[in-house]
Length: 249
Image (cartoon, rainbow, N blue to C red; front, side):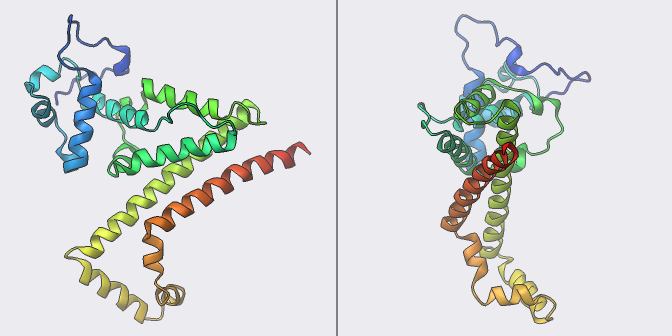
């Protein structure tokens, strides 16, 4: 993808799409094609050439819609947030509404397990761009808390904590999935020998005791993972509210 010596920091959504009476493509279609390629082949396979092939277009024609790789990442990021939106209406109970937003976000990223690692900590300035779906997601999150007995500062703090919790959970889910793939692959025997030899030294008594109870299977069990997410989310929301009540008393 072409790179300019002087990077345009203007968010892609603040720039007009190609002027045409009937544009052949849209940024949404390009983002959807990129998501499909990443899901099927991994994000490393995403390129303008591959996207153009999926859309039946010439590669150079797509540069009229997207100038840089940072633009493409911003569009993908915003498309993922579009999937994280909860269909209206939200539950009347604000705690359940907030929990539903968190669940929807978790589900969206679990459908695209490559996305958390991709979108974390990237250095491109476009990574901080706020797109239309990011605004909708933020608006919906605030709407979920509209009836909460919290001031605006406390609401923003709670949203930040819930976001941190969801992203942390997703990162851990990705690590568990990678471990499961390693355990099922060619390196499984070597990994097993490494762990077993470590336990035999007696240096890790706590791990050894848990290993006899099949802790690894429990830790990686998708049902248990989902259960931990729900329990942790509820404890987080209730804990913030209880802390606020204690401060007010």
